[in-house]
Amino acid sequence: MARLLILTGALLAALLAALLSLALGASDIALDETARLLLHPDDSVSSLVIHTLRLPRTLIALLAGAALAVSGLLLQGVTRNPLADPGILGVEAGGALAILILVVFLPTAPAAAFVPAAFLGGGLAALAAYGAARSIGVTPLRL
Image 1 (cartoon, rainbow, N blue to C red):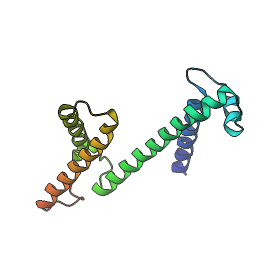
Image 2 (cartoon, one colour):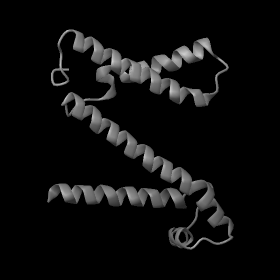
Image 3 (cartoon, helix red, strand yellow):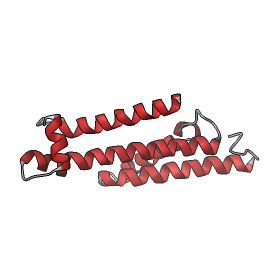
Image 4 (cartoon, rainbow, N blue to C red):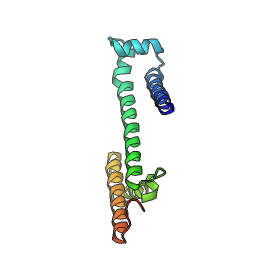
């Protein structure tokens, strides 16, 4: 019962934060008007701001947060360690190293190249950690 209460509270807090992110910004829009425009868009400037600028950013933020939660859950499940984080296996450092290599050797690379480079570096670091552990007989349970 306590878990359900915590989950419900977290979901309500996320929905409130999402609604506030739609309403607050350079030009504040009242919460009731935000809810109305979200359900019934019109040709007003406020509706345009909500639907073309704020709503896509809010949805991307929610999806990114969900993806981070799932990745953390997977990492904790693979290592069977409830305290596991990307720093334990070197994933974080591998991503940072890949970005550093990109900046040093390709200084004119666009900023959009940083995300794939970090993803590749983190993945290679994780594979290296698992490969090294496997070569000496360490299982994910003992990693």
